[in-house]
Length: 292
Image (cartoon, rainbow, N blue to C red; front, side):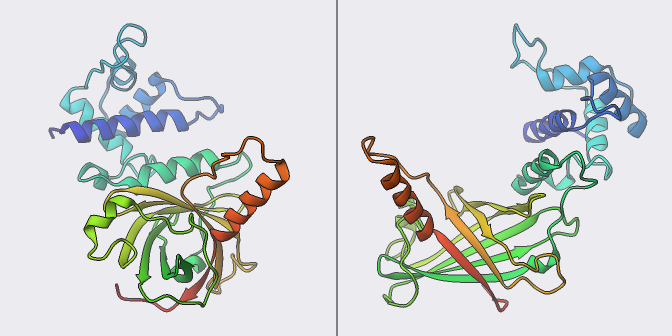
């Protein structure tokens, strides 16, 4: 199989991550010799450690680290076949077909967060799956934020879809959000008939559960891939029961608060930060399934 430039770079990134986050039985990092031996054991293809090193690290670390030597098609196929093995789990076939942002990043983060006394990475409970909804007032307009959480078959991460519906009609119900709670991108104005506040904004991303039961969401807003984040401030007491989780308290975050007054007292600064955090804290409640 002949690989294009995107696929070669994807394989290189996966191989680099595999070596960086995989340890020998002695608790030490793998050498390129050990990686070559593992590839041989899985695929029957022998290659020198230097072939792998130059592919990932470059021909010369000092002279020209950016010049990388691409292995022969046969060796590249063997590297790919090794990385997609279920027990290796460093690459997915779908990643070679199209950009698949929600695979490598969360899986590598889960490996990093794993503690030495944990047998396996923490897997989120199925009780989290479903739709959640919250409504907030933003500059006199109502923003309905809907989150859909879905746990794939492998059960390691949570796939997240977010749909924010913005109503023209002002409403006095619900708490007033701070300006950071829903801050659309100015570039979106040209893509909605009456401005970004009249319509719908969609985002997709992933979330993971840490060993401490913290939930972290990493979201990309369509169509410009603008980032925003959610962090759990409170979880349901029965998170690990079979009953569906009814409420999740999340902090919606985009930009850090700017400390623009160097003369302000510590107490005043903390009050402002707390007020900002409070305005961006959203209590999502489970809702019925929706058709969007």
